[in-house]
Length: 280
Ligand SMILES: [Zn+2]
Image (cartoon, rainbow, N blue to C red; front, side, top):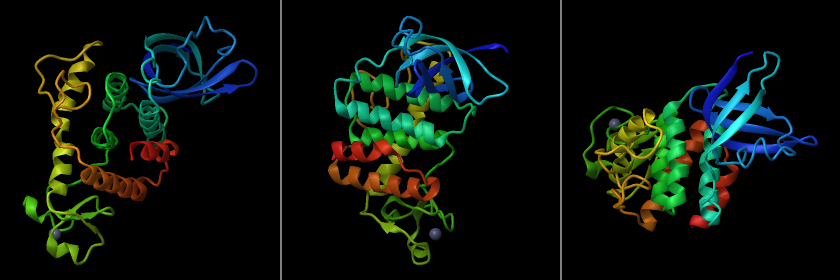
């Protein structure tokens, strides 16, 4: 058995027996992994504040051929979760995105962009409170990294490119906009003019975001200089949202993603209801 060393973000933990912990973590090189940390409850020294939700660690573990659980040998703290505990909202946002990654990934499926997106969210959350628009933005990024892309540029039924003024209909089944003609044949929800183009702007904000994420692959710390600021949390000193937040936009944006995620992924996030009640 070779010792595996990796970067990881702790997704969840639970006590097991008298003194052990079962830990689920998302790694840079191997995706989601579940492991057991022997004596983690008693041996505070060995796993001092490291095996807690939302912490970022350099982890060492042994894979066991007879078990799906790896044996966690060591975890050195990279980034603590300190700073998230100051508000219930921050904890809820962190819980939602860790649950999102946990529920929508399979064990041992490498997904570096998703790892960096989650890291970015947790780092940014320590600095700022997220608006609902911020949450929508990161949710769109994560869906994209998971292979689920909304099509908000052209009709998902006939393929026709749509001018902004005709983007009024969203089909959750097809995952995108419909032209007026196809809207007569395909189930959809209708939205006010201007809403879908704003969602598209939010979705496309990935260009700057993704550039930064790629930049960070080769450097462990800090932001890469010279990347286009996108105006979302942690992506520049001045925070100028690309898409203006408004209650109406946020309510409809949330509805689009709720419809889409429920229909395509059939997953319920335990943390989502609380997050929604807090963010209004
Ligand atoms: Zn069409």
